[in-house]
Image 1: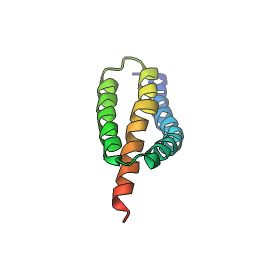
Image 2: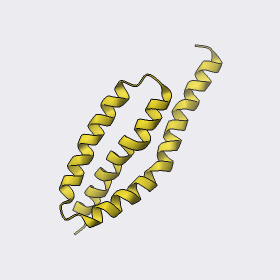
Image 3: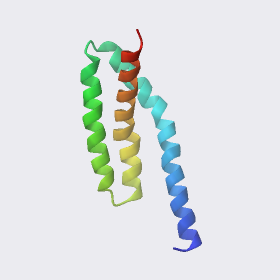
Length: 93
């Protein structure tokens, strides 16, 4: 791999992390508002686990860089927000 190809690959990896960090607070806020209206938060946690599994399987089969960005920003972002929010609710007295 030449230097330009390696540089482009590293930039794609950093862009993926950067975009995920931008989407995480937005998805966390939306999931938090949704979770506050639910009486059974365990169902939301389970839904997030299933969505996360589907997202990681989708990541395994991506063929283009934009597909990985899209899955990471939407599906895996939602799954991470549900897991984080549900865990915080269980840990607080």
